[in-house]
Length: 160
Image (cartoon, rainbow, N blue to C red; front, side, top):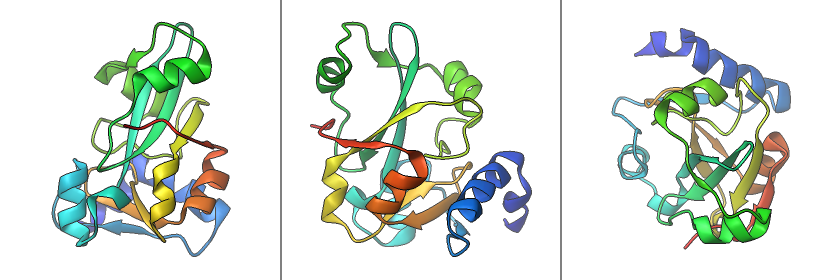
């Protein structure tokens, strides 16, 4: 499992984390954290403290929504915020092309292309939250304020 830290996608995340705060660590899990449920079980934490990184396609760009594991992304709320009618989930190829990650390991940081980030305000319930680090078995722990800073994200009401 340790060689996961040598994967290009994981190294990209690690570089961003270390640039932001040298204390942030990528943790390699024995079991998969591909879904929020899997991650919560692996970490023995509440499902809501797991970050789901969802790439949305808008009329002319992409947007990353970071949603609590026990919530769903509200496309209607996102449409109102960005004032666009056509917003949908990106497909697997688009996710790989824009973020450089495969679904299940999409990190909030270390993307191939610049993406606007919205962060679910419901994360404020937790002292620490856990996000994917470029592979389904790799995560990192961070608090909401630092997640906002490292992603240059905006905390919004985007879940239901």
